[in-house]
Length: 232
Image 1 (spheres, rainbow, N blue to C red):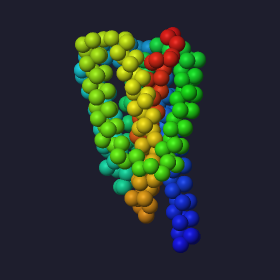
Image 2: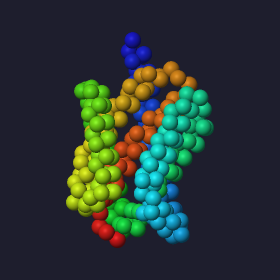
Image 3: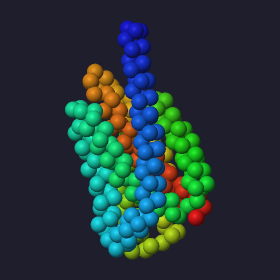
Image 4: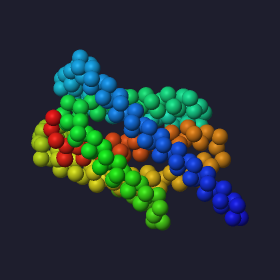
């Protein structure tokens, strides 16, 4: 019995390490892509002009395209690691477009400092979520309602009010919301492993499991730099 429990614990530890490895590499890839696009002035200016002239379409694309890649990742996860990996990279690349403005709005020092702070907060929240004995699944509905509400308020502010104060308030709420999301998604790693422990596609499933953690980190990072970042 002890040997079985030990094998399960070892398997979970390996799976968890793989998920966080993919998460770290995914965040690094996202930053590199965003910076590479930002260095291309012509592409960046075309991106900003398109976003300014077609705000609704841009918003739909920035949300819809990454979500489409996530859906593909979910479909491929039990079929092909290679296809899952390709769609994972596609997800990160399309998501990197929302990170392009930070390289124009904030100094390199501010970006590095914010990355450091975000990483520290992420590690603490992930650790708490992973080790806590409390079942966090009950948070699922509340977190989803909070996320939808934030998206709606952001959209209203973007198209109607255009208030900097409201934007800062929303960013503060997003920070709190995604602290809970990080804990929730970290605990969810255990459930994902338990449901797929015997699967031959654990590598691809680990990629899929890291998607939510990458999104948590990016949202947390963008909100923190929006409030505390030094304008370039």
